[in-house]
Length: 522
Ligand code: ATP
Image 1 (tube, rainbow, N blue to C red):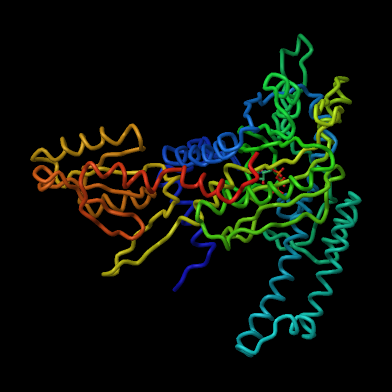
Image 2: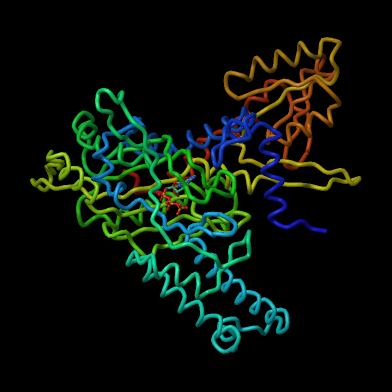
């Protein structure tokens, strides 16, 4: 029987641990909620993702430069950014199970359930009517669908109003009226809804000196804003220009679930692009398209991405969208693209008392630049790559293989070299080939077990190529190269290996795609 997406997801998570991609943090002490360590293969994959992002930003755009700001920042940063006052999630506890939930997530799940009901009716009708089925008409006229739709509209409106007005009592009332139960206890014995600040705090300096309360940054963006003048002046940057950064961020998430999708310590790749006021929506559109192309160039499947435009905008934003990826648990945000006006720079100017402006020589005028932000989570990107790569295949003869069909550019190891047997000079020849390849590609060597078993081991970690050295190699200078996805094998000259592997794993192939489609790259 075919397994559900949930079962496959669980297996993928187990696979990540078994093959050195992701381990629970401090596992010998039973782990730490929503904190993970990347293992020997995970770190390579993650580094390859970061490199692809970093170079797509800083190599392909001469007007984007990088920085690496500290995690600790002056505490006033977080007052200015609004995080101290407003970086909250509404939480609610169930008194019976003692489990804590995000009130907004409970209600969004309820909305999702109604959508599922509508979809079921549509699917049933499509089966019944076949080719003649008119979905739009069915949705408008079927009484059951209309009833569900009305319910959804009503709930959605109440929910949006409550969130916009920060009305916690109303959020609780919605949960009660909708008869939402705790999935653990099955009861409706809910506490009131409270706001919960997601920032971790600690103290800097000893208490005797009057220690200062500081925060672990909940996003990397503020490190860029406070360095705007430093970079602009020292780099003689002209607007429009961008600053890119990759780094850790920390959030005390209330509900930590779905593996590395929602972590308490995670990594972000953010780029803030500074533009003239009035030109921000043009650049917003530009970055939306560029970022989507960046994702699609990896070849995970164009149909797995969609934009989700925000209906509810933060008070300082004038446009916002998410790039969502089809995870096994639904379409989920991987990246956010936001048009943040001049909010951040103005706030920092106000709180620091420093003038943070740009003199535009073309306009002969100073102004506070507007900002387009692209913000993507490395870990969520890692997860989307893993989810689409993990495959269980039944082979001829009934054998099963687990293979990670990772984009070759991202694969932790590009090639594994194997002597057919551990004697007759074959290991020495194989080592020679490793030495020839290792400066250009992450290369491994394996001489243990049968060739079949060795192939499986490499499939499981997503190595695109295996190279086998046999007795003939010593005479004809040829080896067998085996392709991961098709399992096809071909006999090639040793000196051709470099070219064959390079063609498949060269990240420049992706950069060319990004640039070719974008004549607007300044
Ligand atoms: P969500 O609504 O899922 O909590 P968010 O809208 O708060 O996410 P942003 O503040 O826009 O997220 O952060 C930008 C990106 O950082 C997200 O698109 C996501 O990829 C990543 N990210 C945010 N929170 C987490 C987390 N707890 N764990 C892993 N990645 C995260």
